[in-house]
Image: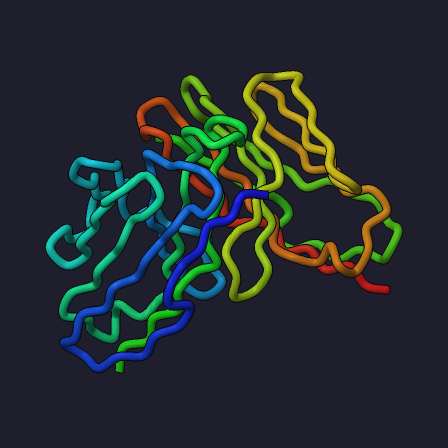
Amino acid sequence: GAVVSQHPSRVICKSGTSVKIECRSLDFQATTMFWYRQFPKQSLMLMATSNEGSKATYEQGVEKDKFLINHASLTLSTLTVTSAHPEDSSFYICSARVSSGGRSYNEQFFGPGTRLTVL
Amino acid sequence: EDQVTQSPEALRLQEGESSSLNCSYTVSGLRGLFWYRQDPGKGPEFLFTLYSAGEEKEKERLKATLTKKESFLHITAPKPEDSATYLCAVQAPNSGYALNFGKGTSLLVTP
């Protein structure tokens, strides 16, 4: 299947610091990427939709000033958790929707996830 | 409001014992229904996308089917390595292309 990478895979930080997570589609282009978070034993909850070259669209209840999203190219989106607090600790997963690159259009592939722990 | 309900929550099978997982949905104008497999601590792995009632797709021991109200993931002669959480998600016209996930079915296949 198509490959989506995330970096870092795991991060531990102090309360008040900012953390940047990268999401890359390695073998296809994605005009749209999505950011989800997943709490233990729960399903994925959509945080925001990231469109290349435009502002991200945030779900209700997600603070856009806290979770900064940048979709700088057709293969890269970043999520920055600003002034992180312990309640932001979670598993963050990105997905990329195929727009071109030899894959079936509209298929969506997920990254391996980033485990964020805020002390 | 769009809803996705998966059943059962958990399923335990013996190796070789075939079964089906259910995903019921209420979506106006379904764009697509997606199945993923997720192992603990990892991102979901894409399995299938179905777009219209009557459509079926197969991959190894897995077969996904779609009706106007639900989708089934049939597992034929499962092996222990099929143990995982299986997630169903729907894509609705008013959600852009984002996916709305069900809570998943946790499958355990014992030798």
